[in-house]
Image (cartoon, rainbow, N blue to C red; front, side):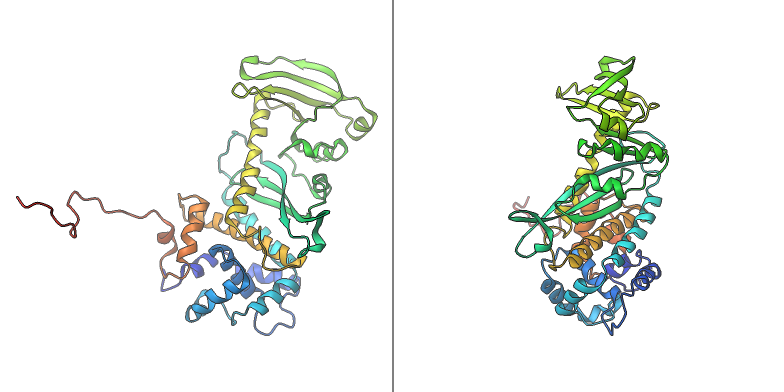
Length: 389
């Protein structure tokens, strides 16, 4: 039952407060803090994400205009732009990174049986990165090129539900391959990557962890064919081979055999060559897995368009990481609400509804559900008749 609570307060009930407090205590986020605690900071930043506020001044103005409702929305301190700016700059961003991981764990549990393009029991991840451009004069710590600054989001996306399971935020100049050094493969899972991650010494961590990978090969790959498997060329698969690397450096990094699948798209005529350490799945399934990697590109496009991660409220590295992790938390929180309430709308539609209804005292499921339109054959009551018969 709603009992007069705002939509914002109902939404935040799906964020476990007791686990958030543990994250705060882990990094002593509320040490020597009088009023404006970490939860107040999280609520302010979440409000900014949900309502597409352009600046901290916008957040302050909007929340102060609804001062009488803030206590029942969970706020326990007066909203101040300067206080929020200092909190973003000084409070450890790892508080919100750890809390996002808690929400991610819950979302993955809810989307465990979510279907995707390939019918497999194994968990399939897509690994990729995206660059967020910054102004060099305002963000000198994030130097990317001579006249440009940027941060890079290295992301491991669970393709069941498009849930980001691992996010590493670095400066733009950090190469994509570095994430393989920080990644701990999950046994029995499948990792799909583009050719930017071709480093055979680093890829060898997957077979050692009893995990599989599917990666697009580079054009200059040197190998020796050991065996050719029969294929049905009508499906577009040109060849399915077992190969060994031949260059000394590649062979030293990856001494085991690899599977090489070459495919031609019947519609576009484009050809791709895939490498994998999985010899059990059909060749066409490996191709479909690689096609599903496009979901991570759609994820990057979605969060850049619908969340505040392209313009930032603060200029320090801590403020930028705090904003990105809270944005990810909101994305995952909305995904959790969508699944728990059984809402058929897309995440985009849910965010649009939330952006204009956070202060409404309506049941959350009713606010996010499909409106029931009256169906009647009677003419509208306020419609005047043009002619009298």
